[in-house]
Image (tube, rainbow over all chains, first blue to last red; front, top):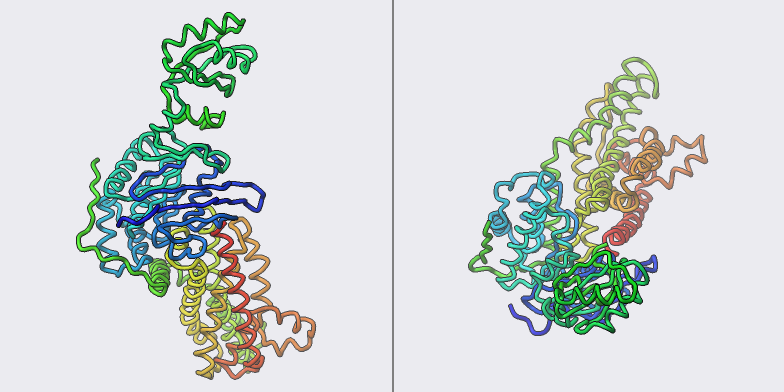
Length: 317
Length: 277
């Protein structure tokens, strides 16, 4: 069901909460059919608010948002047909069993009783919950509850599946199990938008990632493109006593192959072409200017590096 | 742990209509009620049963209290039947709509899947009124025989059927709307207030144990209780089920329709405010 144009489109989408907090600030976004799109950013960056506006649960202050070409503000009921939502918290219906959660969801979306029964059975099988069909949802583990929410969200075959921090709070095995399911859905052409503050997940699974900070997109590209954009193969982190801003200036001026230096949390981060080879030179320059280096570490460029470079702060706080 | 998600063959596109989705929401609520009949029945019958038992069985037998014995006791039993049915219906609105909603809006957010069902949020809220109204109707049907049979003294019923079949559904709808309104106004922390500060006065000053006309000697009270919706329900039930004096049915209908509209508007707006930021 290939559509013309993007599956999601926002234009200058903005949300200011009554408290005065500007959660999302002029967001322009396009998500294409069949891609896994990640909104990556720290807590409070505006990811959940953005997902909330696209899923009709948050009303934008200004700007526009379209899902499958439908204006979500003007026609929320129509937009809701096209979206599936897995939210951050367990929102399963506790008055119903595992199976009934799916059955009634199917009925809400127009399935007749026979089809809703068949689909509920099939999904429980596929999401490996069949043996819990008659259980109360409160007895499910976090991973099982998350799988059931994912099953519920895709049951009506949405054009786009939204997942808000889907793996937050899950144990590693459940996380892997959920990603297996998402990867499988992706292979079948399901468009997925997810928010996360786990950069490893964004890096590994997303086709494109928007790095978002203080309600704005600071970069948008494939994970590989984002890493290329900072022009360095790796990062050297330097801890030292003294004026770190001065040290950062000296290191980027005197060393070759350095692509920028920023100070974050008592460390100087240097983007470099050859991290290992740069180490002795870093120590040498620092000592020559009277700095005592107390710790040095190197790392490959990751999305976290990109984030630090772009925003001057750590992703996880 | 390999997952294979198969696409079902011969998949017909889903055609949703607002009516079908609304109906499915009602089905969901019906399934929950059916599952919990073991809770529904005791919570519905216990209070009216005790009320009727103490006031109209125990008191006359021990020769104490309300109205004394003989003819006046019969009058009292007849007055109370209407009051008890009225209270039961109104309380059911709170129990069936307000209390579950307080929880679902609160920390569980389990209302979300219904909010995301493909129909306007206002209709998701309105479904709660209808579903609550139906549960109120069920409660009324369960309670009526108790109120009519338990009293030690004869109860003089004379059903005015056109009134019965219109007033009771209207009352149920109003109770559902009141439940929705309270459900959106109160939070888990403030629920005890709902009982202690709102429901107790509504019950005691709702013309359940006495007729509105009988309040004549306390004129100020007779005027003050007119803000209480239960007064009109009790009095209306008197008109529908008995020959006891009651407030004019025209007034009863008009005021109940008014309350239903006001509660619905406040409730539906409150619902939208709670689920949409």
